Image (cartoon, rainbow, N blue to C red; front, side):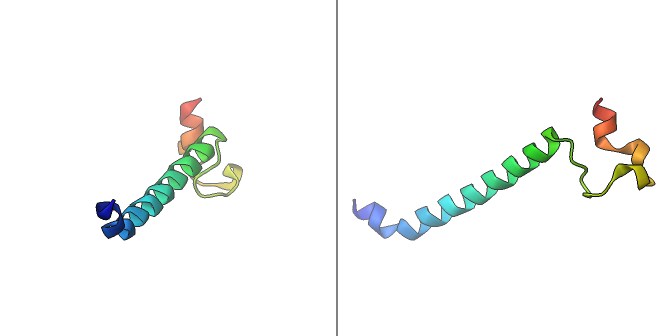
Length: 58
């Protein structure tokens, strides 16, 4: 129990960092699943529309 009390700040910091990383991964997975473009714009007006990742995956 004294070890936990001595390292509570480290434990909380690691948990916060792990939550931030998890949120980033979940957000990226949702964008990829929803086929949201990485730039957030409409692909029809994009000069690189033929190279778009969502079109390559189809």
